[in-house]
Image (tube, rainbow, N blue to C red; front, side):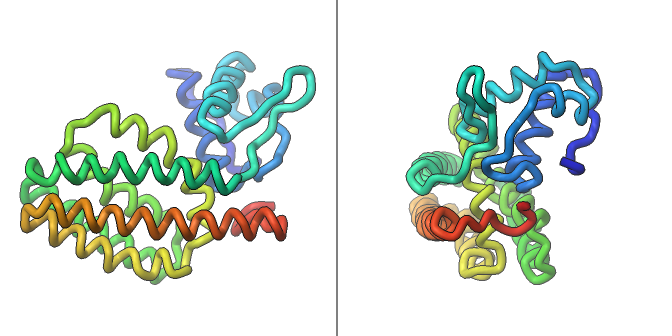
Length: 230
C-alpha cells in the first residue's frame, strides 16, 4: 500500500485506474488482497467516486473481483485466464507485425534496437521494472507503425494480466532468451520481411504463454505470490 501516492485532480477516474492497476501488476496490492474504496481513496487523495469507477473498470479487465455486500478484492491469477489473455495479445502483436513492418522506417528500427539494448541491460542488472518497460517499448514500435487502434487498445487491456505473471519469471528462460528473439524480430523488420517478423512474434508469445501457464500453476499449488508480493 505504501506504493500508492496521491494523484492530481485532473482526470481523476483515469488516474485512479492507472495507479491501482500499476499497484496490482507490481504486486503492491497482492492477489486476494481486500480493496476498500474509502481506504484507497484516502491513500490516493481522492474522493470515493473515482476510486469506485476505477475498481469497476479493473473488474471488467479481470484484475479485481467483487461480490455485492460481501467483498471486493484483487483476483488471483488463474491459468486459463492468463493463457487466454496471452493468446489474444499474441494475435494482436502478430497483426501489428504483419501490417506494421511494411510501414516501419529507419527511425522505428533504431527505436527497437535501443529498446532491446535497454532490455538486455536491465536483465543483466536484474531490474524487472526496467526490463518490462523496455520490452513494452520495443513491441509498441510495431503497434504504432501498424496504425491499428483496435489492436493497441486490446493489447493495453489484456497485457496487465500477463505482466503480473511475467514478474515471477524474471531471470528465468524467458528473460534470458528474449533479447535474442528480439534481435531476430528486429532483423526481420529491417529486412522488410513481414512473414518472418510474424513467425518470430509468434515464437516470443508462444514461449511466454507456456511459461506464464507454468508460473500460475506453481503459484496455485504452493500459494507463492511471487517477488515483491506479501
